[in-house]
Image (tube, rainbow, N blue to C red; front, top):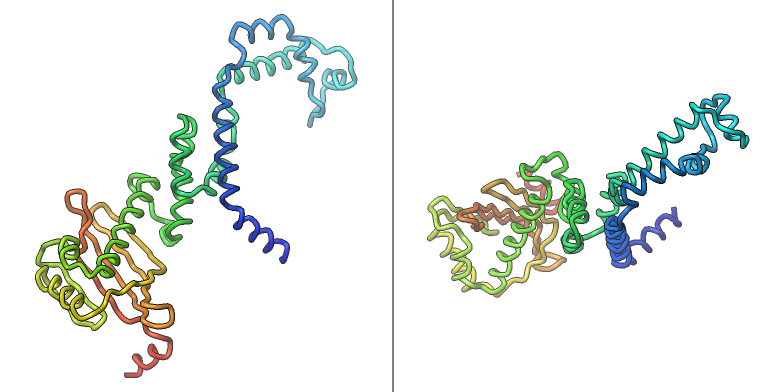
Length: 301
């Protein structure tokens, strides 16, 4: 157990080096695919003129069911016509595969490629996709983006099947989490004008502050933030446990926020709508995070 734990810590501490090595190896495998295999004329000619020599090199070292001819080959004897035809067919098959130009990267088991790419982060995977067409195909694999999504965001949506694939879903989730981060930057800067642009200007928007007071409608919501910015100092929240769910034109984000790590903890939910390619906030709910003892008191009363 101690050895496994030490190995895990060592791998985590050298993760940047591991990522660099993986990118380098995958790129080398891709570059190797550009080297030309023997031309068709050479392949066929060689298979015809020196087929016996290649057949001798291709002789099997073991077999599950040995015929008298195969036993003779293993013992250094001469091959019969039937055995030689079988070996020649195998040689021709190998030559045809070589001539097709299949690279080592393409011959890897898909699960191995996906596992290797799972060590990469978002920028590294994007850079890898720009190296060449083969790397672009590997880096756009849906399973690789699903693994990256689970690593960077949450495992809660393992059963989700994104309409446009996991790469698009990853990009949409990253976009909505960036918008959510902008919300906290506006609170920190106490900018009423920025908060006014951040909310959708419609009557059905709602905001519930930590005080528990509900404000409904665009004007009432913006006024509530104006009062909060006038009476309170700028707050630098520490945001934890961010969970986002993105649909076509709607998304919501849940999170835990802390004024400091000892107290001032809140559960928050932000709901967004997409209009003309931009996300707008339409609902904000903040409530004080109850301790275990407080939960018992709430149930009693």
